[in-house]
Image (tube, rainbow, N blue to C red; front, side, top):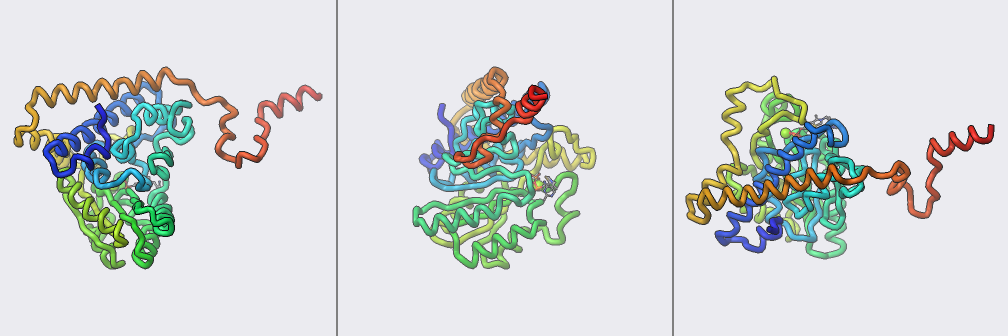
Length: 349
Ligand SMILES: Cc1ncc(C[n+]2csc(CCOP(=O)(O)OP(=O)(O)O)c2C)c(N)n1
Ligand SMILES: [Mg+2]
């Protein structure tokens, strides 16, 4: 099975597109469940993991409208986006596990994963941190005239960061091939959006900069994909935009957060907005696949994602000296490791 965002865009408009989008969302959900497992087994590097369960339609739907040469950055909750852009789940899991076989040789982890080959200019732990690089990528694309666009994926919390407004202004002023994609999961850590912002219609702020701006409901991945296509087409033609996708963060902010600050009734209601389940029901309603066939597909995906855990656990940790690799310019001599230096000093005594 080869389920990437590129499959979905190839089969655009056909019934198989429903299935492709479902596959991508199911792969994201299952991958995230396995990430949680890696954490529970104390095999993840670092203590922070942000799962995108409940937000799968934003990743799958938006990325279906992107082309292979397009660039993007993500926020700290970016596993699903990278998978939807065609990332290898084994290399992703290995990265999250801090292993050398990972995308960044285990030095980036969940929140700093990147891969220039797939156009991933980097996840970012600083809220709003990845946004300005996309203005630069958009400017580069326009200079090169290579037809690519650049997309900044970020959460609703980033709308409280000034850098977003600087970036939107520059993109609008220079008419860059850029889309700002805001995944509004209703929460910034423990704060609900309506307690943090006077006007939760976030796209209205972007419209004030002259950007094409809209909010869509993330329940139906098809709706997201259609809106994303319009925004990507417009950006490629030099009309930057801001698309907000409404969804609900199913679980706590990070893996350890049990979200005691949320009303259980609200949480139960929010989880009813399940884009994976919605898509599954649509496929059955349209008669494309029946329950048994979808179960078989889910099992196949579960197997694929189970293998990412076994792979990660079996991989080696990066050697200590690799700490200095990719930090200094290749022409610079590697600094002496502290341990070697101390040993040398002691040996001279
Ligand atoms: C500049 C900055 N301020 C605060 C934080 C701490 N922090 C990490 S995630 C987060 C909330 C982000 O919410 P949102 O942008 O909606 O993304 P979500 O976690 O909901 O996906 C905050 C405040 C940070 N990482 N960077
Ligand atoms: Mg949020």
